[in-house]
Image 1: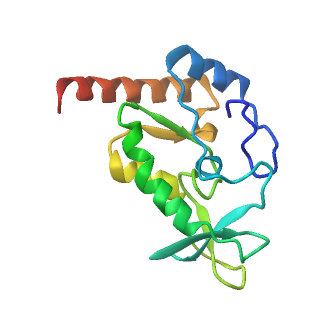
Image 2: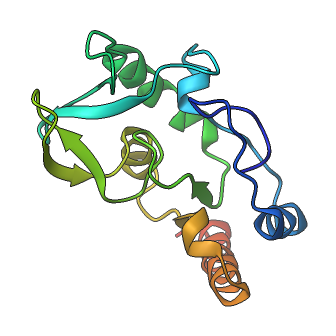
Amino acid sequence: MLGDRVRYDAQVKQYPELLQFIQQHFDIISVCPEVEIGLSVPRPPVQLSGELANIKVTGRDAPDIDITADMQAYCQRRPPQLKHIQGYIFKSKSPSCGIENIPIFNSTGETIDTTSGVFVSAILQHYPKLPITDEMALQTTVQREAFLQRINCYRTVALSGN
């Protein structure tokens, strides 16, 4: 979203109006769990697999790729380092950063359930009241202003110590 080349396919997804809004209102911390655990760009795509109670992060086209342990360690380590954040804009459709409707596949490639991305879940576990959204929910000025208002309310509560 910020113009960094971090996607599995090395493509850059740009959202100029959203980027302008973000730069105008926030200090930016760029986070890509896959890159931060050492995966290359480009890289084989990953997906969520297994079952809801035991989610794994495995290769979409190469099931022998399993980054579950690295991602779990990252999800324990990284969120506490972000304690000063006051809002988070995630990347939709990502197995680590998608907020909702991220498919979980079984061994035959069928979708058996949907959930949040593994890093989203880790952030919300650490910061359950943190205002979050994704780029798809910030397409209009009204949506962006509503998110900004949620952050301002969060800041007010955080500063009051409640």
